[in-house]
Length: 317
Image 1: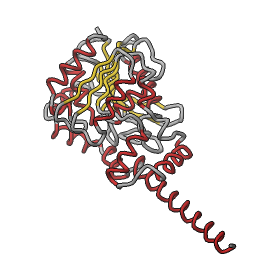
Image 2 (image 1 turned 30 degrees about the vertical axis):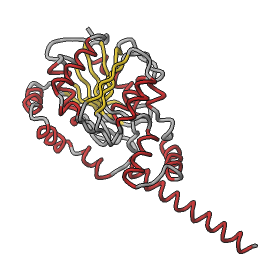
Image 3 (image 1 turned 180 degrees about the horizontal axis):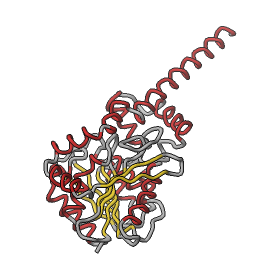
Image 4 (image 1 turned 90 degrees about the horizontal axis):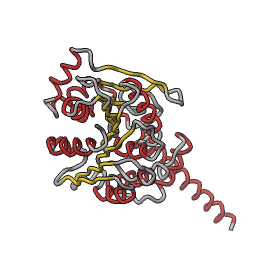
C-alpha cells in the first residue's frame, strides 16, 4: 500500500512537471516567438516586404517621407511601457481619422496598405500603433489584443488630440488587429468614435489557440490549454477565455463591418458568424470569396476599398 501511494505521488508529480513544462513552452511559443518578433522588430525589412507585396506603397511612402509627413509618436501606458505609433495627416485638412491595428507579430509598417486606403484613397488622417512587444513598442510579451485594447483606447485619444480634438474616427484592424478592434469596441467609447472595421479576427484567444494546438500539434485543449492559460494569468495578468472578442462585440453599440475570407484556415471562417450574430445592429458582413487569411485587401483592392468607403461613409461625413 505504501509503495502504491508513493508511486502515485511520484506519478502525479511527474505529470504536473510535464504539464508545467509543456505550458511554459506553449506560452513562450504563443506570446514570445523570438523569430517572428525579430521579424516584427526589423523595420527596414518590413518596408522591403511591403514594397514587394504592394508596389503602389513605395511612391506613396517616399512622398510622405520627402514631405516629412510620416511621423513617430511615443506614449507611456499605465504599466510604464513605452509604446510607438506612426501617424500621417491627410493631404487636405480634415477631421476624418482612422486608427489602424496590425496583426500577430506584425507592426505599423505592415499595415501600410490599409493606411494607403484611408490616407490616399479616402483622404483620412491615420495613426498606426505598434502593439506591445512588436515593432518599436515595449512590453513583456504579445498580449493578443486583450491588454492591447487599453493601449489602443489611449492611442485613439492621442489621435483625436493630434488631428483636431473633434475628430470622426474609425478603428480598423486585421487578424489579431481585428480581434483587438472588437475587444476595443466593447469598452466605453468617446463621442468622436463612429464605427469599427474588423477583418478576420478571432472569437477568443482560447478558441484561436485551441485551433492552433489542434492543427499544428494535433493535441486537444485538455489539459495543455488549461495549464498554459493559467500560467498566462499568473505571468501576464489575463487568461485565454477572458480575452474574448465575442463577449466584447456583444456589448458594442457602434456600427461594425466584419470581413472574412471564405478560405481562411488560420483564423477559420466559422469564427466570424457567431461574432456577427453577437454584435447588435448596426452591422455588416462581407465574406470574401476565395480569400485565405488576411489577404482580402491584397486580392480585392478595389472592392475592399469601395466597401470600406461605403460603410464608413455612412457614419463619418
